[in-house]
Image 1 (cartoon, helix red, strand yellow):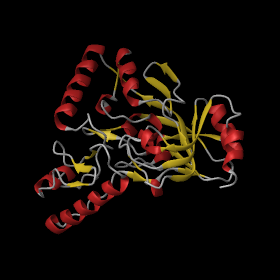
Image 2 (cartoon, helix red, strand yellow; image 1 turned 30 degrees about the horizontal axis):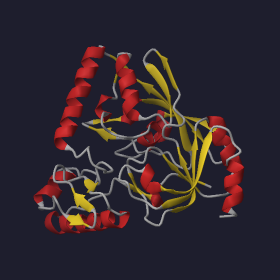
Image 3 (cartoon, one colour; image 1 turned 90 degrees about the vertical axis):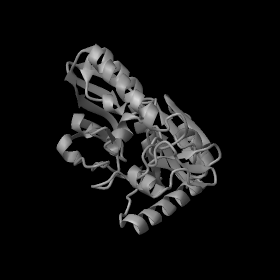
Image 4 (cartoon, helix red, strand yellow; image 1 turned 180 degrees about the horizontal axis):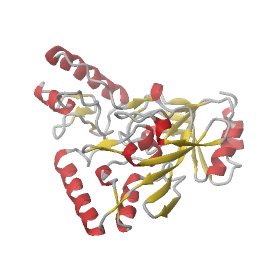
Length: 304
């Protein structure tokens, strides 16, 4: 990277953007691990994002939302990390169609939709994701996926040009979409009408289920492994007697075996060591290759 001081100085001249140098990524992931980002940029408008892309053209950029599904290296990231969470969060409603910014947090969005009598996203209650990241990985739970609600998304490419992608363009599949080398800045979701009372009842039921069955009060990144076709990953890990397996400051949750939790001082290397051990044992015992659901730095959406 060229002179970091010059880049930071130029970026700080942009309105509606926060720029931090050597920012600990552990502050921006739900697992609370990850080393420093050489430069962290948090734009709060699309115009600021476009201006930033123009200034940093040719430099490697990593795109993150709310950091809820990320496993970032202890050594940090040398490029520019662009965080959309809490930044680009516009909201427009036209009947059943809702257009939201890519940085919109899913939890307050669900609450806002419920107040409008709009249903469809309740399954995601308790998932600390931002809309853009949730769409990029086709966030799903309890038999539903966010891809089912998408009408279109608007993206910005590395040159700052804005494009619209329809649902078919995104080729949604299990925890995956065909969105890469771009930034999701907005999405149109098509909801269903339902009574506010019924929506809020369902939200309460789902949230109670999560509190009872998942370790939502401690740092984690949600489900670590994709569910195999026949038996859920958590059940396989439980059957192998791996609940409570601990390496360093990381542990396989005793409440839900497909969660790895940070007990307070975990490093990404601890979590990766647990992942390797769990995959090895499950392969030996059940002849099943567990696929990782978490996204590491090599899989992050990037621009250059």
